[in-house]
Length: 138
Length: 117
Image: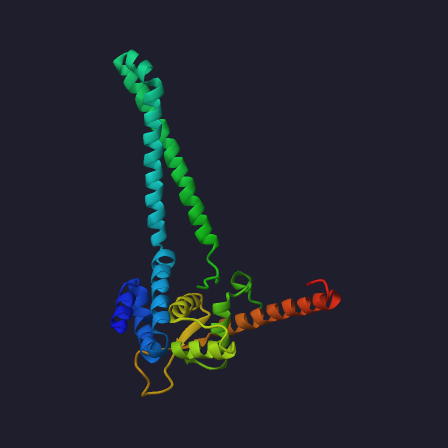
């Protein structure tokens, strides 16, 4: 049962890592399981998280998703504030002017959002790039 | 030829212990784990996840490489690893660095033996 669970954890590792080391990790489990089976399972669980979140670059997807959410939030908040505080002015203006003004403000809000996201993405990228040293203890 | 090891130093504890375990002879993963535990009198142990994560990086950096299995009737899942020439020089550089740190520490502890209470 525990061996099956360990194999399952190994199967969930990124394919390249699994192909390269999966067999060996299972052979180590077979040799040592009796003594420290739960430690090995915990180690595999930590390894799984580390491989996906740190080594495979999946964190960049998470960062991109977070960046997108920030952009949408900033854009939506900006639009809400513009409508709340300038709604009467916009509605009292002529239709073409209202549309142009609204679009301009909306565009400005989205540009600010995009700049914020770009800065966050760049900061994460630089941190990742400069952090590529041998410091990868568990 | 002077190689620049500064981008790799200092080594993490796991990387240092793995390189030390491989300094004497080629070993498979389980052998490395056992040797690390032996060298530290059981005070430092690494699990397979940490071991192979480090080995993957060390191999990518050209510090460790795979070697042929010395025994024919060995478990076919086992793979053996050894230090490259660069890896051995890097380990020597790290030991030299640690030696300097220890010398400095001894000098300061001798100079001010009662300060640290």
